[in-house]
Image (tube, rainbow, N blue to C red; front, side, top):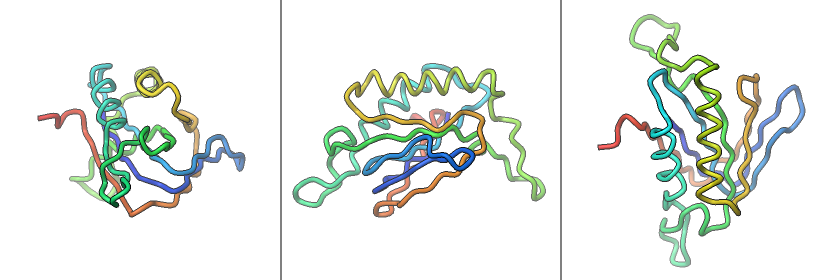
Length: 151
């Protein structure tokens, strides 16, 4: 399982011209599910994500996590995080999980985040939809995580 975390001052998702989710200060997280991923991958990434200390404290140091700074979370499914680009110019997505496997695991990841931070504003895009995602990157701070690279 892979996530791309972007610290944002605002972000939104639109489907067919309609806003389905929007947040202010927080994280926009693109979530890719691989064919061999399991709930343990989602558990690990949810804990790492919500514990990530990249928000400024009173001294200006990146020392606060999302909950401590009162931030929100916007989770968007993104199978293209598993693009293979070694051969040719057309990416292969063979390592991405099929929708029937990916959607339940994406939903599980959302529920993990909600369980870990029940008071937090957590919104999502629409799984499998063609989405327009807009954001204002804060910093910019962008962090890549892969559950297969835990050690």
